[in-house]
Length: 125
Ligand SMILES: *[C@@H]1O[C@H](CO)[C@@H](O)[C@H](O)[C@H]1NC(C)=O
Ligand SMILES: *[C@@H]1O[C@H](CO)[C@@H](O)[C@H](O)[C@H]1NC(C)=O
Image (cartoon, rainbow, N blue to C red):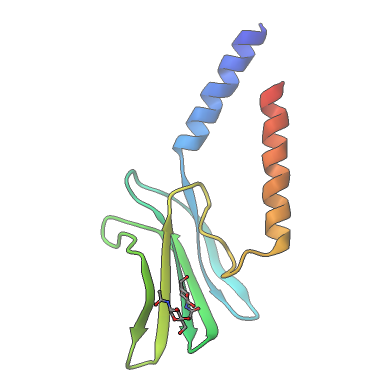
C-alpha cells in the first residue's frame, strides 16, 4: 500500500514537472503585472524576462514564454537608440522561473522557500 502511494506520488510529480509554465504579463510601475497569465512552455523553449530601462531607471518588464516564432535570446544592455531604452533579456527553463519583479522581493523568496519545505514534507510521507 505504502509503495503504491509512493509510486503514485512520484508519477504525479514527474507529470507535473514535465509541464513547465512561465509567468506571462507586462509589469509596469505602480500597476504591477498587467494581463497576468500563465503560459505552458513548448519543448525546447525557455521562459523569458525582458527588463526595459531608460538609463538606470526601470520602465517596464515583459514576461512570457519563448515560442517557435519568438524564441528566447539572452541580451544584456541591448540598446534602442531611437527611444534611448536599454533591454536586458534573460532566459530560464525552470517552472515559473521568470520572476514577477526585476529584483526578487523578500516576500517571493519566503513563498518559494515555504513551498519547497512543503514539497519536502510531502515527499517524506
Ligand atoms: C551594462 O550597463 C551597465 C550600466 O550602464 C554597466 O554597469 C554594466 O557593466 C553593463 N554590462 C555589460 C555586460 O555590458
Ligand atoms: C543588465 O544586466 C547587466 C548584467 O546583469 C547589468 O550589469 C546591467 O546593469 C543591467 N542593465 C540595467 C540597465 O540595469
